[in-house]
Amino acid sequence: MAEHRIASTYAGDKGDAYFEGRGQDKLLHLGYHLQAAYYRPHLDAGMDILDFGCGNGSMLAVLRDHVRSVEGLEVNDKPRALAQENFGLTVYDHLDAIPAGKLYDAIVSNHVIEHVPHPVAILQRLGEHLKPGGKLVIMVPIEDFRARRNVDWRAPDINQHLHTWAPLQFANTLREAGFEPQVVDVINSAWSHKLFFLGAGMLQSIAGRLLASVTRRRQILAVATKP
Image (cartoon, rainbow, N blue to C red; front, side, top):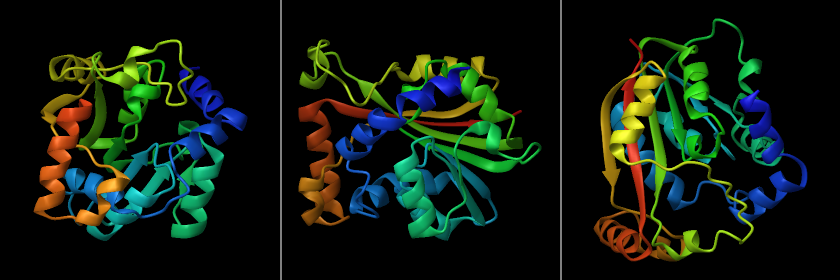
């Protein structure tokens, strides 16, 4: 099953390497607030939400103040433990652990779908836990072949990204999974720990756009509904 393959990629030594390489031991830094800001306009105070691939729970902890309830799903043991211990979050270790029949108003996911072997199948599984009319709010990276990080295919890659999309192709993927795309936008901004000293205002926004241009780090923000 595709989900079990995901779990094995981010378990044991591989999971530890990803946890350390991605700096997931650092909680609630500015990057989580910057990323959460893309999701907030698509959520409201009456929603129960699930974060698919919630990591250490920091972004979910930020969103918690803006919705009714939050839960997460994270296959990697170390960040899942941080989410549970530091934020008191309910975090499932795989989709089958979510109670049968449990439905959410929205499911969010931040830079996760590119890791899964079969995106359409996983999106369909997520749809089983969305209420009719519920929202799927997803961000995925756009992998530019010209970016230095993507040129050396021989290098070990702890990120293990398997897919990338342009807006049209991601909309097609959502439709194939049974969703109705409402928004599929390119986000021309990126953040770096080195720029956190700029704060969360206009200077950060300008620097984020420049960083995205120089490093060719862009994202897709997609919002889709379940019929």
